[in-house]
Structures are given as C-alpha cells and as structure tokens.
Image (cartoon, rainbow, N blue to C red; front, side, top):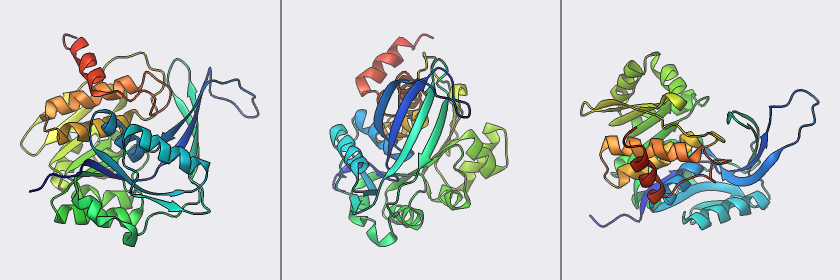
Length: 308
C-alpha cells in the first residue's frame, strides 16, 4: 500500500485557554490577584494532536472554527507546531470556544469557566473523507456528533485505526456508541466505571475490550494507568513523580503520546511509558500546551527514571 500522509488525524473541537495561577481558588465576590497569565490553544483532541506533533508525528486537525481573534490564535498555534490546518473549516461571523482556567499554585488543582462559542459543529457532509483515507490513526472524543460517528465508521471500513478519548466528566450515551468503533480506547477511570458498571479497573478494562477495541487503557491521575490488549497483555503503568504546576491537558497529552507511540510501532509497554512520561512533563508548566515535550525530552526523562 502507498504510504499515508498522516500518522495521526484528529477530529474534535479547538478552544482558546486563558490561564492564570492563583494562591487559592476564589470565593464569591472576592478580588484575587493572579500571576503567570498565559493564552494557549486548548481542547482535548486539539491538545492531543499537538502532543503527537511535538513527538514527531505527522498530524492534521479537522474542525470548524470561528473567524474571530480566537480562531486566529487556534490556526496559528497549529501551524507553529507543524499540525496541518488544511481541514480547519472557517465559520464566518462566528466565535470559537474559550476557557478561563484558574490554577492553584502548589497543587495544580483547577477551576474552569467555559464558553462554547457560536461556531456550528461539523456536519456529516463536511467531513473530509479523503483526509481520513490518508491517515494511519483517526483520534476522536465524540465532539461533532454525527460527523464524528460517521467518520469512525468510514475509518473502520477503510482500514484506518480509530483512537477514542473518553475523558472524565464526558460520559454520554452519544460517546458510549464510539467505544465499539475504536481500535484504541483510552478513557478516564470515571468513564470506564460508568461504561462498564465496574469499579475495579481490571474488570472495567476487560469490559472495554469485550466491546470491541484491540487496546484499552484506563487513566487515573497520579495513580497511573491500566493497559489491556486482546493479545492478553495486562499491566499497570505508573505515573512519574514531578513537581506539579498545572494538570491542564495532562490526559490529552497522554492520549496524543500514546497514539504517537503506536504509530511508530512501539510495543505496548514502551508506548504506555512514553505517554506517562509526556504527561508528567506537561504537568511541570502552566497550561495544556506549554509543557508538551519533544521526543528527545521524553527519552531523557525516561532514562533518568529508569532505575526508580
């Protein structure tokens, strides 16, 4: 078969994150000084694709974005990271989603205020099918509704592997239906429990595999992740200890690094270690994008922690 143009193609929603570091999270009517202000691109799938690009993957993003200043920030952010913007559909006269994130200094805990913007989601007719043909992996989290579902079905029919992100707080019936269509299913522990009805990660992981994926992983913050494969592989991947500044985007980084590792044909243990290390490094900086590491940085980090 001819080589693919993209290692990872993402379909999801791009946002702009406005982040501020504070000593404590504010109470009602409190005026609070903030430091470390930063404006970055955000969004689960959007940050995952930048993480994959930083690690050397050939990437592109599918989305519909407004033509406001936030749309410019989003488009320029992708371009600077080498993520193809060819499939960003402009929505004239509309705005992009924005999040204001207050990060507590010392713990990395966050309060997020989110505005969805006015840009309509992609329709099925707007999906760039030829781009999916040119991808090794299609990474999604269920946003863009029916367009996402049909893109996953198309990918499965045309030999493109589907990677699914089931984040904490994002379990819905419409996202549930994507699990059986995914080849790689990485979900937060909360999502895994709600999907499977099982609290035990081992049982929840088995239920995810039974639904259809070849590889499943369950992430659980500082408790690390559990990884499962249809070939019988089962293991726990530890979370690496770092001095946490902000946990924004760490899960997204894990997803992007994981699928990047798979696209490079790394074995499952090496892939999970790569993803965990990348997420740890990302937690050392403010925001979901600022700390995304390069491949040499991750490899150096893993070498440093090899004897731990």
